[in-house]
Length: 128
Image (cartoon, rainbow, N blue to C red; front, side, top):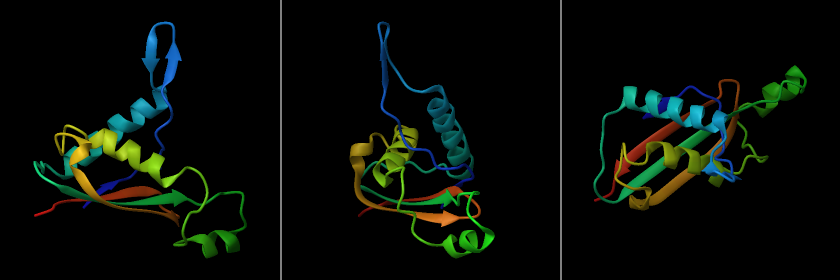
């Protein structure tokens, strides 16, 4: 299991200018930090079909009362960002490092949960 101790961030749409396309600087920094953290914990490389299990632990809004914050801890997160956009940031960051291409990912399990300790937990398994 790889634990990324960062607040999960969704992959934004690329930006366009007269000089070409580019990604938001915050997203680029997030992807790099995610990769460095993942690489320091696991050195696996998958050649075949791969299963990806990801749990996104999302921050609880500080504007809520302490009672509501405590009640939300561990509950499903049903607000933005979308799970698929969060998943895209993880798949893009690990692409070429843990697997040749994210097309190898054949089975995906992803969920978003409120937590007092925001993070991302990733499990990669080769499918036989």
